[in-house]
Length: 127
Picture (cartoon, rainbow, N blue to C red):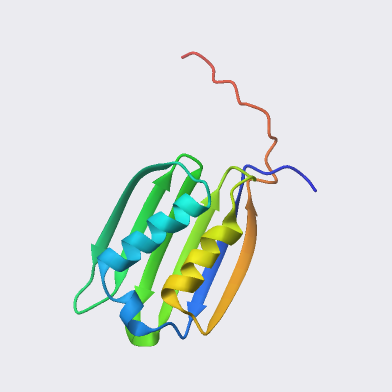
């Protein structure tokens, strides 16, 4: 397998209990707990409440980021885990999502990022 700069998990959660997707406090706690379970280093986080419901949020981590957007009216959440450290425990983070958001179905797409780059540090010319 060729090296890459990072990996991304695109996680779609279907048929979730709508009440678990409606408000910032629950989603924020879920994402922070997922970051902690993954052994990520949390740098900052920001979440926004949409009216009448739905949440978007990001957890910035030293290893990259974790994002979420929810549609309670559809029982759906879209989550993105982007990690530059291959040692991150993504399975543990996904377990948190399963337990808290209670999806009926979950689809996960794995994407390797930066794999076609020459993975050598680029030198900048002084200018």
